[in-house]
Image 1 (cartoon, rainbow, N blue to C red):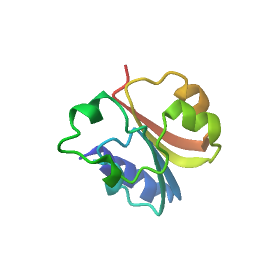
Image 2: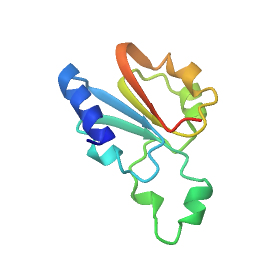
Image 3: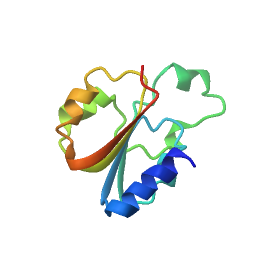
Length: 113
């Protein structure tokens, strides 16, 4: 079972309507999420992208918000049913996240330091 299987199971079970993924990067999970209203946040301008630029094209990744998670939460107030966080530095993201989630919803955090 993969993380997108768990997210899709939660979406189906709770009949969620919208989804936010922070740290879309290579689109491994985002494309497999089965929900109509989904948004992705990723600056797409970091050392990993530069290192892999010969065989990876970030323009093919459907990221709605090309910015850091901190920038996103400072400037956007959309409420989401389920959020998947896949970043290594949370900084102020967790503090700002509380304003972005609906009551009694799931937040999954992956690979945090």
